[in-house]
Amino acid sequence: MTVSSVTGTTPTTASATTDSKEKSALDKDAFLKLLVAQLSHQDPLKPTEGTEFVTQLSQFAMVEQAIAQSSKLDILSTQMTGLASNEATALVGKDVTVRGSGIAFDGVNATGSSINLEGPAQKVTVRIQDASGKTVRTMEMGPRTPGAMPVKWDGKDDAGQPVAKGTYSIKVEAQTADGQPVSTSQDVSGKVVKVSFEKGYPELVLDSGVTAPISELVSVGAGGAVR
Image (tube, rainbow, N blue to C red; front, side):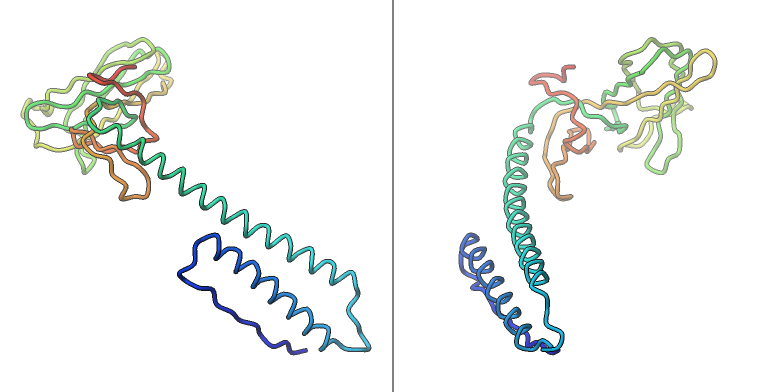
């Protein structure tokens, strides 16, 4: 059978609440018109069972409720994002520690970094790599106990020559006495100079040039990162 389409428009200048109510009313009106059209065009020899209409009404009600709930969740999500963004901007000027492998060199000093060992290690090797992934400096740290291990780099390569200014990364390899790998994580400290929202979520930009999502924040300190 052929059922004529039903269309409608909603005002673009109405408030969100008014739009939601008018859209809901339109959906109900459109459904009822389609239901009447279905009844008027059905085959008399094959009438639609009453249970089918009940099922259709139930499905329509469920869809309508899902749309309303989705709209409310979208509003709640927007509000939560706004609150999180406001809290993130309060970190500007604070000394923080973030989870990350970046380390910056300004031509004189390299930013502080720390490695966390999950267990005792007989051998710990730290490699400083440039943006292309090339290792410019390899440092053997010797045996280490579990916990935080600060990493100090003088900004020089293996030949003892200063490297170019820029952001580098740290790669860590830790092993036990029997050669088993030890899990590690890395922290970077610095002062927050800006909070970026370009990627749709807050990112902390440190004075060293290191950028990290706010989800990687480890600690905050007024005059120095604290753990």
